[in-house]
Image (cartoon, rainbow, N blue to C red; front, side, top):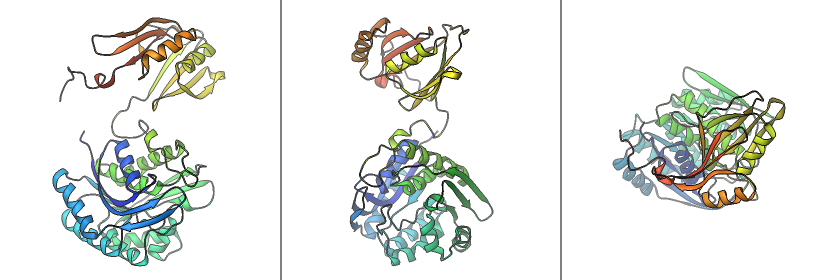
Length: 388
């Protein structure tokens, strides 16, 4: 499985919530390689945009040519463009050089805070970018401005007919608790329904969605599949946002590690036991964060570094010696000492092993073997790692 190479043409956000910064975080967390052509430098935070400095069009093109000529490109995401001339120059260059590369165009006009990020001349040039795009992702106000149609479906259909790109109708700016998104293609319509997430951490949702779509297109997904997976990434990043700033805060890109991506992901393990209360207390004491508590079903779930870990108790269960659960922690020795002081018994304390891991062994109240360990690079990159 190769690493998708995603070129991001967009403005910088000094607050780290949107723009190039959100794009890089999205592509990186999904497993791609992000390259950038910065179109503008902004001074902004969660409250608004204080200043914008556009990058000359020739410098934007130079960035594009420099990275793509050497590294190559599997998909392109276009966000904020510094001006109308730059938009036309980028459209011309991409149309000439990369006609077969998927392009996602997010026609950024207004920041989440309400500050304008594109003047009339720039918006007028957006048609040139839509002509080379695979998918355009305007929000509802942007969709109306681009098409002069009030009805979202009519607006999207007019853009698809005029420019040939697919258009994603995003329902985030609509009212009500129910949300609906729809991908309008020349020969197909795919829709998704969901519920609104009650949060003020919405800065960069559009940038994040467009970059995630570009990643999945670059990985070989079809448009509808790319949109579906990208929506999942955005929603989880909103649900796990860090709550920073005094206004519209950034998403929790850094927390979406194992929820969506390419290939198989080992992100959930369940063990059995007999005494539900003791099992819950044991794993909470280890330092896991409990996120589900269902004592009537003798079930609990915990978070552990992006993965989840569950216990399912059964008073009649027989625990075998066939499986051991490993939790890695960088503070291994201190953690073991702290747990031992709490009265948790260890079969042995931290030991250096021949396979280059340092391990401490114990058992949970159900008799399951548990290791706390520290491996660092030796877990995935031991000296004897097999190479393809």
